[in-house]
Amino acid sequence: MATATSKSKYTAKNIEVLEGLEAVRRRPSMYIGGVDNRGLHHLLWEIVDNAVDEYLAGEADRCTVTLHKDGESLTVQDNGRGIPVDKHPKTKKPALELILTTLHSGGKFSDKNYARSGGLHGVGSSVVNALASEMVATIHRDGHEWVQRYKRGKPTTPVKKTKRFRGHGTTIYFRPDVEIFKRVHFNSTEIFQHLEDISYLHAGLKIVFHDETKGEKHEFSHPDGIGAYVDKLIADGEKKSIHEAKFQAEKDDKKCRVEVALKWTQSTDEQIRSYVNGIRTHGGGTHESGFRSGIVKAVRNYMDVHKIKPKGISLTADDIREGCVGILSVFHPDPMFQGQTKERLNNPEMTAQSEGLVRPALESWLNSNPTVAEEVVARMVLSARARMASRDAASDVRRKSPANKRANLPGKLFDCRTNKPSDAELFIVEGDSAGGSAAMGRNSKTQAVLPLRGKVLNTESISSAKAMNSQAINDLVETLGTGIGDKFDLHKLRYNRVILLMDADSDGHHISTLLLAFFFRHMRDLIRSEHLFIAQPPLYRIESGKQTFYAADDPHKEEILASLPENRNPVISRFKGLGEMTAKQLQETTLDPKTRTLLRVDIEAPLDADKTFQQLLGKDPAPRYEAIMQDASLVDELDV
Image (cartoon, rainbow, N blue to C red):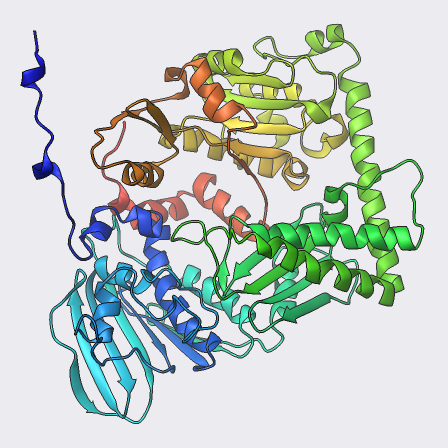
């Protein structure tokens, strides 16, 4: 029998103090979101953001990015002031070395040097340095050139004055560390797209991209700014505008600047992109919430003033914003981002700032453009009528009686009790085991569960009729009630949300991909009408004392572990599948609308989506083989 004395003692000896940038190398996911392809490219965005900050400070007008021939190293150059090289009065180290080797050091914590900037945490450049096997900083200022070299975050040379030089600016060369990243190879297409996007946000900045891997040079300069960006998004998305004139507005109170551009299209989806100090906020935030609400309030005010009251309908916020393509760009002196990767803005005052610009300006624009306003409002009324027709038709056709429902639906379906499609949601799960857990953990009034048995058919290159020969596909189509292909009728959809709920592993991702291909090829309007979602079940369970945490993936796990007190020894368990989770665990993490996370499936770039599905699932194996060989080094082990 084990006794208390047999346990290892926990004393001061067990406390680790990580020196310098070792914390970054130990847990890189905390700083860049992961060590995958996205995290790799995040290193470049950090350095580019610093160059853009010089433009925002009014000290630069040019940024050059060079992807070297090996595809594994980059150089970013700006013509700004150049990082200071004199010694810091407190540390007695050169400022350049301090900035690139110390977390939370820099000149952006106050507004003395940068009124607005994207890099405010003081960790961006030093994180890149920590995760690079090699970095070289070349500074031009004070009539000279200064150079310092680094290896994995540590200087290998002092700051050296190498020669006289008339210009000014900063040049950073870096090569990401293969000890940190599974595969070091930059995607030139992704870099091209990112640089082009940010060039629209900074109308006075010229960005040059030298792609030595392809022997190409690209220059980006867009004096028309975000207005031209809206036109680009509409063209790329193959959407049709319902009016020619764009709505554009901006407000600059010398501290915060807000700029918006907007157009309505015939598309059934809403596409709004938001940025803060030139950084894309994929998760939205307070500024985007104000933008969205400002659009709705402006239209409603316009309709009230002009006494436009369509008979028998009530416009929802979704009706008003349907078909919107909009850009919101905010420049703030002290943005509060959620995490170092800056996915979401949390400044509470930005809701009122954005709404305060958009609501009166858009209402005035509608009043000044009556023809456009009439077209926009008519489009919203049609959207509302289509929504109501869809709801009524679905209710009449598919939910006339429980007996009719039972007679026409697959026997394996755990259906919900409600007769209102607008309240119902369907979870599509893999196998009976996961189906049983989901069925027990669901809210049976509004949540239905359909277990799919057997292998899901690859429908990428087959007709809709042939797809229906698959029992799993047939059961799915019967459950949804919409028909398929040319016979698809959205009005007959029995559920407001169709949710893919698969294991959080490679097999689950594979099945999700097969189902996404099916919906994209044979039920695309289901995606366009915003009815398709992907659930985010946890991959890890972390028990620390009396607390229990769930992590969606490895970076999330690392973030949770880093937040725990150092004297804790957490117990980490990995779920092999949904069937291993109890009904209560599944309900708490994945089914309950109050605590779950759903990703809405959208088709932002139809041509890119088409190309991706062809590459992954098409008949021609050559593109697939090329992708596999290109990313083979990312695979640590195979589950076969």
